[in-house]
Amino acid sequence: MHLQRVQADRVRRRDRRGRGIRGPLTPPQLPISRSRAQIFDDLVLDAVERLERVWARELANVEFLVEDVPRVPSGITAEDGIPFSRLESAGAGRARITVYRRPVEIRTKEPEEMALLVYDTVVEEVANLLGLEPETVDPEA
Picture 1 (tube, rainbow, N blue to C red):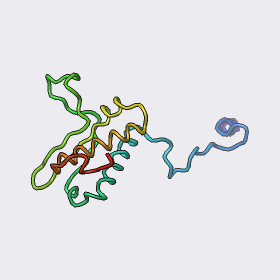
Picture 2: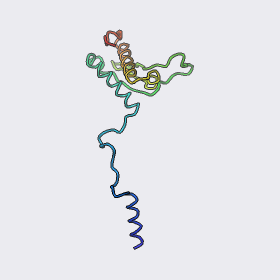
Picture 3: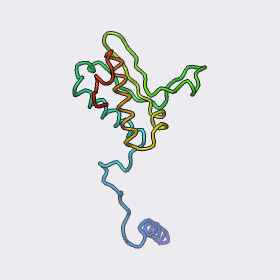
């Protein structure tokens, strides 16, 4: 009999004031919050999708990546400049464009400003890849 009473007390402590056990704050299919990295990834994807509307064939073999920080060779300091992105040609018409999240975040204060800098960075690397001026790749940039 004593054992049953202890179990009843345990149930009462978990279900305070008879309101039932608390449920989730949001439905399971919705994210509770988005990280800065996820938001940045979306900005890069938006920039790439916007350029692919015009340059789909030229960008078919281009891989776009996001990394937190660039690997800077020893001997290079912040005064030399920290890059926002890097273009690597892999041969056979393949290329890789990497956009660095932290340098972009550090240089921007507002979300709109960050979105613009990400877009300009992607346009510049695509222009370098195609051998064109950034104004030719996107006249509005």
